[in-house]
Length: 169
Image (tube, rainbow, N blue to C red; front, top):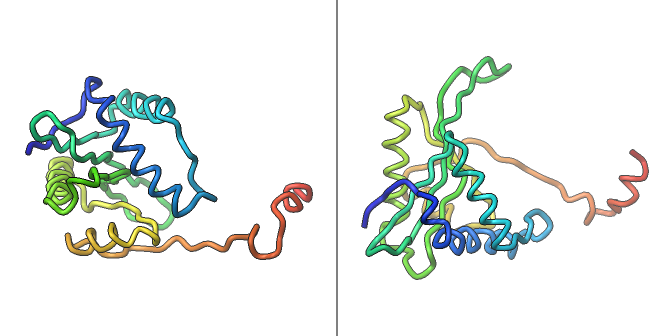
C-alpha cells in the first residue's frame, strides 16, 4: 500500500469514500449535516483540489483507493487568547468499510504527522463527533487526546420552535 497525493484523475474513486463519510454523519445527525449528491461531493472535492493549502492524501493498493485524509496547515497568528503556532488540521479521514482495521488509517495519520513535522507544525488537530465511537477509539489508540469540547443544546427540541425564533429576530 502506498500513501500519495490525490490528483484530478482520482476524483471518481474518491467520491464514494467521501459519500460514505457523509452518510455516517447524516445517519447520526440529520439535523446538522447536508445530504449531498455525488455531484455536490465532486464539486466540493474539485474545489478543495484547486486550493493549494489543502493536502489530500490517498491510501492506494493495486490502483484501488482504500482511504483518504484531507488536511491543511493552519497558522494561528495574533489570536486574542492563543499563542502563535502552526498546526496541521485534519478535516476528513475515511477508510472504505471493507478495508478498515488493516492499518490504513494509521498509515494516513503517520503520513500526516510527517507532513506536520515538515511544515514545522507544533501539533496535529482534528475534531470528531461524539456519536462516532469507532473513530474516537481509533484516535485514542493512536495517542490523540481530547483538547477541547464543543457542546450544544438543541433549541428546536427543547420547547422553542425555530420558526418562532426567526420571527423575533
